[in-house]
Image: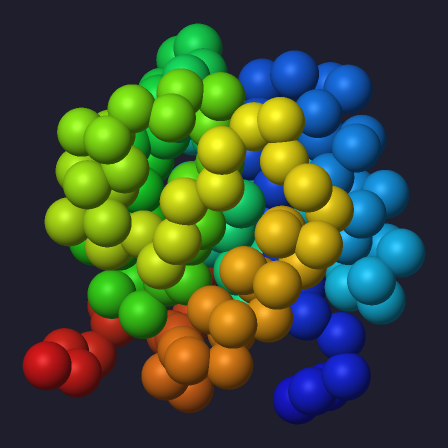
Length: 141
């Protein structure tokens, strides 16, 4: 496994936001594994690309970020997800953490906040080995 580059899946419905996040990540030496414009596509791409971390917006069409978070954690209990939203409401932050998010970043974001949150989450995440797509994850807890 390449421990040098952190692979990130960006899930946000706004193209300019995905582009801004991509620029921050690439400047920090991280790799964008894929980008999705809604939660449904994000869950699909997660299983295809197996990124180290997911940056997941909350308010999106088709499938919102909290629903996508629940599905990601159900499919991979060790999924490392950071929620990212313009909504700084306390109840959403608490709900996201209860559902398994590692952190919550409020937009507009500071580039160093995103990079720091990703590095911290990856540093504190358990090593994982996922089954092939379509396989079942082994219970770890």
